[in-house]
Length: 301
Image (cartoon, rainbow, N blue to C red; front, side, top):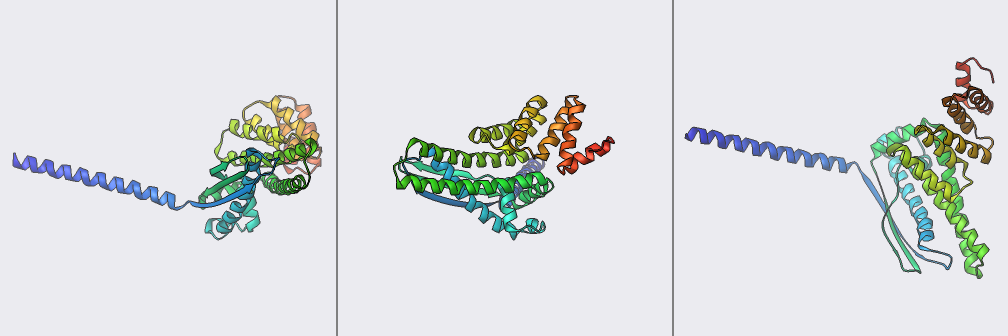
């Protein structure tokens, strides 16, 4: 009987030891996972003008804080082995990470006159390196991100210029509307980058909704229509995709990728004549994908 009790006690001790080892292993694994993350934070306080609202303040200063955070993250990633091996400049890394990581607001306060914002960016260099490598293989996406960063900088300069002009003289409705439109274009850039970031972690529906918000804020953005088209295509809604491709081409008649993808959408709907017509147009504009597609079916362009 004593031997049996002793044996049971030994077994119990063994189980306790195993449980402790498992808990410790899980803790270590969690710590190791967290150790790979880097976080950068920035904060901003702003004296609002009469033309500002909480929303306009958030849009303007989230863009400013995001720009500083992306530059800081870019400088850090440039020295990391995973990213260094990609042989990119700091500016290129900054542009690409804008379409991969998102700035998160962790605190904001608004009393009608002053606005305070605190935001952070958190990233895993290994995950960012993998995403950057995927983006580099898509030259169209790289071009779009470079352009959207440029447009965001231009929109921010315009907002600051208009704000100074509004402070000098009493603003009328026309001036206030101009300021509002500039802020909207800036916000549209943020939604565009959010849509690109969702390509890695989001669903087609989430991607579509991000680009829809960008379009609502800036209805003349051909790239936003084009990227929403891709989401509709993934959802199998080729007719809606074609309507968006039409709008993108209307806004930018030299949009080769839009012609190419509209051709693919027509092909999915069984309209081979229109599909070949669009592929030929894209091929003449220099689209290698369109040229390869036509070559594969023995069609000259």
